[in-house]
Image: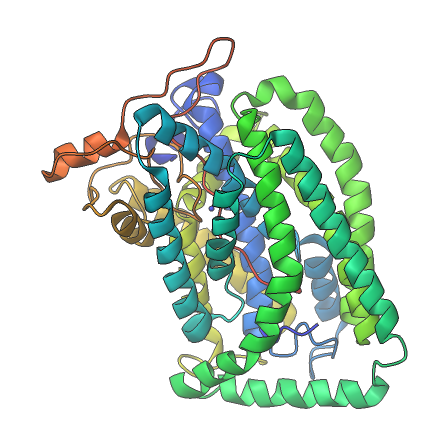
Amino acid sequence: MGDHRGETVGRAVQGEGGAGTGGRNGPARLADVDALRGFALFGILTVNITYLASAYHGTGVDEPGFGSPLDTGVRLLVALLFEAKFFLLFSFLFGYSFTLQLDSAERHGARFTPRFLRRLAGLFALGVLHAVVLFPGDILTTYAVLGLVLLALRRIRPATAVRTAVVLFTVTSAAYGLLALALRGADGGDRAAAAAAADAQRATEALRGGLGPVIGAHLDQLPDVVFLLAFFQAPAALAAFLLGLAAGRHRALADLGRHDRTLRRIQAWGFPVGLLGAAVYTYSALRHPGASAQVFALGVDVVTAPLLAAAYAATVLRTARGRFGRRMVAVLAPAGRMTLTNYLTQSLVCVLVFTGVGAGLVGRVPPPGVALIGVVLFAAQAVFCRRWLARHPYGPVEWLLRAATTLTRPRWRGAADGAPGVPGMPGVTAVPVPVPVPTDGRSAARAAAGPPSEPSPGRPPEPSSEPSSGPSSGPPALG
């Protein structure tokens, strides 16, 4: 995110039917959702790395030395296809999995709220550390705060949740439109562009320093970041939470084969409308540095990015059930199970590559090179996650957050059981809310998993735990 002005596959991915040993009617569909999360993780990295690699990105000012047609083309593609899209997928899954976690707690007579609050507190603490040391465009703190709102709205009716989400998107877009009108004629022209360029150059010099100057640069960026998180990303994320909650109440992801027609419709509408809005956003972000134009573009993006994100999701879910579905899921799903670890690791690697803490390459790598680094990093993470999950039930950071949430010592070794991803938290692989558990380690871990879910009459069997949501990039160019 840089200078910001302006979410269990385990052995299942090795089985048949696209990802699971149970074929298309069992664990495979859980792996499909993990694959969606992994896909979103790649999109988030593609966006975040552009901000970590350049202090000019997001300012509306061209970066010196990188103005070739290839450089410009890569910037256009990233802004058009990636920015402000992928955090919505994680937010939707956050809301969806929240409902499954609630249902599990009710079935087992467990106390849901204290456990959920501890999880949110853990996320918030990780987010603060992440924002200050690694990447000011952190999303974990926003998810932790909005998680409190979701908790308060947990009894909302699905139809009301959908209407509220639509209102949130619409009102936020209208507010940006009005603000754009108010800013007309006050853009500052060349003087504003020169000031933005000077600020970006100072940030570049600081980021090429050691850990102290890097943290100082992050702290300087935080006020602008917090403003845009509060007024752009937070309303959109909350709206996506509510849409996920409504979908979770209807178990929309429990049997994707029944919803193929709906997924096709989402693609038919989401791609053209979403890409049209993305084109407006891209033009303003890269070609029109004036404040009013960028604010107007954000207003357009608030109501069109959800459609493009939904079209992406529909495409991934339909592809997972197709001819090459098993291969795609095998690649993406392990990364989707470890989104919290991967999200933080991405920032750490980028700090080591681009700041003076490591190689100090900020502002020195052209956009195609930055994109290639992102692809290589994600490929390495996908390989690592597959191997890690063959020996461990949780990712490293997921293990820590689960320990803080359950106040137990989760199982560290042994392949994952084929349980789905984490209830309601970015990248956390967890199981349903447990009843009181024994204190010995292995039996405690088994008890924490709880009994298998019982299918309701007339409803396909539901997994015993839920797909998680995942972290995201920050505004204005949100993954």
